[in-house]
Each structure stands twice: as C-alpha cells, then as structure tokens.
Amino acid sequence: MPAKTDPPDIDDVEPLADSTARQARRVVAAYAIDADECRVLLSMLGIGPSKLEA
Image 1 (cartoon, rainbow, N blue to C red):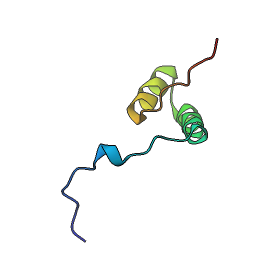
Image 2 (image 1 turned 90 degrees about the vertical axis):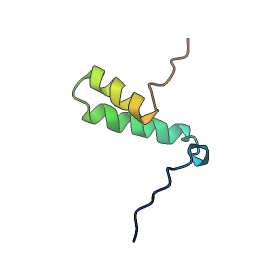
Image 3 (image 1 turned 135 degrees about the vertical axis):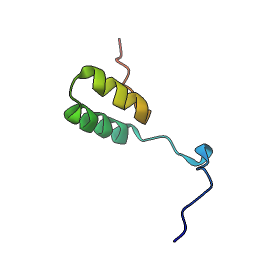
C-alpha cells in the first residue's frame, strides 16, 4: 500500500468529547515524569489542563 502524500485536512478533525479529553489527561499525567513534562505533553496533544471553575 503506498504511503499517503497529502497532509491531513485539519478541518476534518472533530473536537474531543469532555470525557475523552479527561481520560487522556489522566493517562498523560500517569506517565509524565513531572508536572512540567505533563504540561508539555498535554499542550502537544492540544488537551491542556481543564479550566478550574471559580
């Protein structure tokens, strides 16, 4: 099977459901070495920390 040469269309990506994003944050936090690495990984995935309600 030949490799795809077209870049993915970013408009086709759907936002994550809240529950999926929450689960992904937990997995990243569990495997991150420290809080700084956790923040970097979450940022790279586009699922930064959830907003705290005041």
